[in-house]
Image (cartoon, rainbow, N blue to C red; front, side):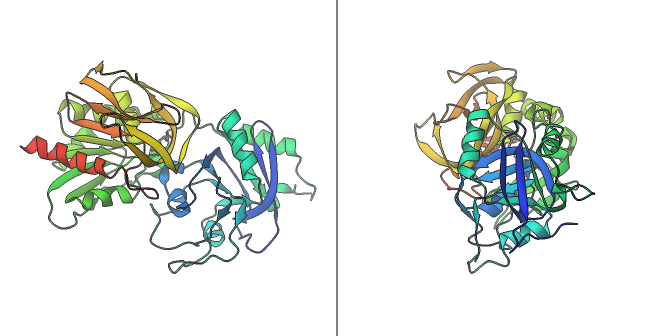
Length: 386
Ligand SMILES: NC(=O)CC[C@H](N)C(=O)O
């Protein structure tokens, strides 16, 4: 049972796995939750962040101090529910205001049972995560802070529970968020192509961006086989974003290799980029604290052009920047790089029609600078037909 903390001053505690503790007030549902503490630098787009399945099992700290100002609407969710396992804000909106708003963010979090905390010094917390790295965290409020005999639970007991929670490294999570049944997103206007999209935790805007370009998108469960992919008669195959550690995604890597062997045009986003990296023989590794937000500079190395882009990743592909590199599927080069830290942000195959990016060209939320990548996918499919 969860209740809303709206308008109350229910105490809440946030405990990091290294023992650092922040006190605040319950926000959203009252109770307890665990996850990986990460921070997002987006000043807008909290609904898209909360409903992005890639955030499954993560407790998101917002660096923007005011959150919830535009309330919650029915148009912006990227999936059927909120996926973050916890939410940390400095100063929640007391009077949300927007013509599309249907309810407050606090009410929505409570209705979906998402435990949050407000009144936290999110700047100090973010600096801590930046210096020490992403780590496990717990948020506790209300009954979670009192024993059955009515005495307060000791901080050491809370810390022990945080330290017993699962780590993100080694987590195989796509199956927990992806569709279990295939479904079709029809092309908008004249249908030009059919794409099989393997759902590893797909955001709703991604098939929409393809549909806008005349693509009929067949979204398939994460368990789809190579035969399932080809059963839809695809002109192209897409691998989506998704939660968890790409080192666990052996099934998706095997399916992608099947697609690369057949030389079908292939596009991957985020988790899909990590799967392409692995399919080509590269490793993946965990970033210290990851990239999350809608203001990350990425350079397209072919044109030199810099895009401001939306990110949400905690892992990255370990590929040499000074390519091309030989792979089992011919030469591959790093197409995009993050200008903050030189992390690989895109891969392009030179001998098979395949490419991917680590960031989010579907731009929900985020700037639309990278929309050309969907056109590039269309060009690959056109090229295959010519
Ligand atoms: N948005 C995503 O697809 C994230 C991919 C992967 N789970 C990561 O954290 O790096």
